[in-house]
Length: 392
Image 1 (cartoon, rainbow, N blue to C red):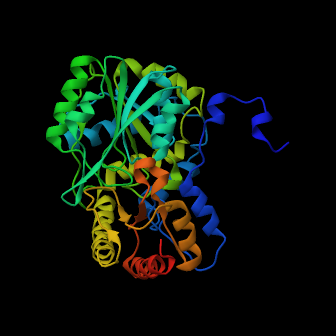
Image 2 (image 1 turned 90 degrees about the vertical axis):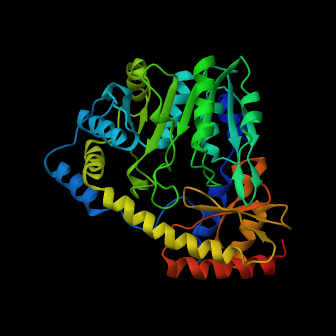
């Protein structure tokens, strides 16, 4: 039986939409000589600090089930890390270790969302963020980011007007994937105070917090949120520490939710592997140099990407503040998915279609510039030639 509609599966499963990023990538993975810029992933291997810590943990017998909330040592190390960044003290009861930022998002959605809850967010956005809440039955309302003076911007007054009395939560990814938009600190404070006043959950995807202007820490709600606030931060080791394949992240939430997340984790995977958590501990203890090195590499990649994209006819370059993407408009393009597929054949370069990030992303393409310059430059040369040849 090939027709999924004839199978007795849930409505929420039927409503899931396949990733267009993955669709392009899977089409290109079997092709020769493709330069892939489609995923949000660096090509640099994880530091030996993490590798050695994981190997040592395996050799010492760390092979068993872990506490549902994560190793106490890792939870405490995360508290210390956040305190150093944001100047607040954090109790480890607020920290739940997760198997990736994505699992963190899924657990948060399960913890606070009931069917038909109203969730307010932004577009363009990495689709997985919002799908986690749609799977839980929420109604997701989005406001589009706009281009203003060559940068992405959010009309905060208009956004706050969407926060009706029946709004359950605001979900924000800042720095943002795919645009690199980062909410200014002054706007964050206004939104935070509004959500606090009206009892609206504020959920922050902080995965790119350390990849802000190539060496700074992005503004964060964590600098104000107390244990009493309806605020949750989701983070990951994937990006800033180049640990995508390790699947390790964390949630920072009110301590009242500690047992809720522990149970949800138990009914999901019962916590990441112990040796993976040991790698996380080591990176937080001694891996700050790795974050700085990555930002230096990203700065070099961004310089090439921004210069070359601005020279391509028909491309409107929009300056990002954070993350490691360029999300640019191709003025004559009406089908970004087909264009991305065409570029595989024509130019041998893999990009992400803008439509993958919601309706507001159509007309755009995304590249990840987290690449060595000797790979990035020929990739962008191919892209320029391919866009010209494709006549999108």
